[in-house]
Image 1: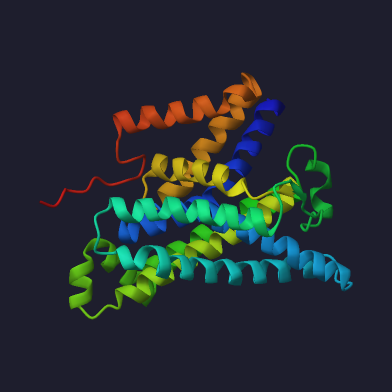
Image 2 (image 1 turned 135 degrees about the vertical axis):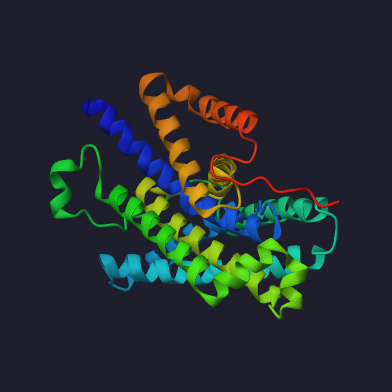
Length: 300
């Protein structure tokens, strides 16, 4: 039973990691029905930014939570600026084009950002400092659930609640929902959809940066390719839960995390991806819109 509980907590952490990235995918798709394949690279850039800032702060004599907080703030701002810029350069000019054009643009932007970081940094894995301190009250549970895992799970839960409140109760959230339902009618109602779409990209990018900093600190290393792998898993989780749905993205991420954790623990780590994608295929066969997704009538 202890082993099962350990795997459960491991899956919860994995799912929380995927959720921080999947929320960005699902927000953008919910607003403009675009799969932003460059989102994983924003996550990677957030992690690299935090590494550079943390190194500078450590050399300047900063320690502990101050390094984590300042690195996080700079990474979030930098990633948000990247998300805003990517939307303006790669997607806005194609807003009236067929759906295939922005999809290809997203893939191109993903490859561009990967190679940009490869040339600007290195192709090797770089060590990432452990920025999250070990809490004293977690000492008895460290073997099965570390302080960094507790922080990741807590941050994911807080982000989901705040994001839900933003979408349901704020003026910008109402504008997002109106834009998602009918963009033209939202424009006629006086909503600045350009600002809504840009805000969506910025929020999604900021969340990816938060995930990048926490996950890199937990794992202890980064390279230019981490965004691709994490992005594919997070996209799978978003589709699994019902892409376009914030609770669905979190639920899909948790289901994916638990699936990988239990398969790794009881069968073999060699098959974790096989079972994860098999689960995705099965759910899409019997429920194409995902676990919490809603089917949409096709416009003709």
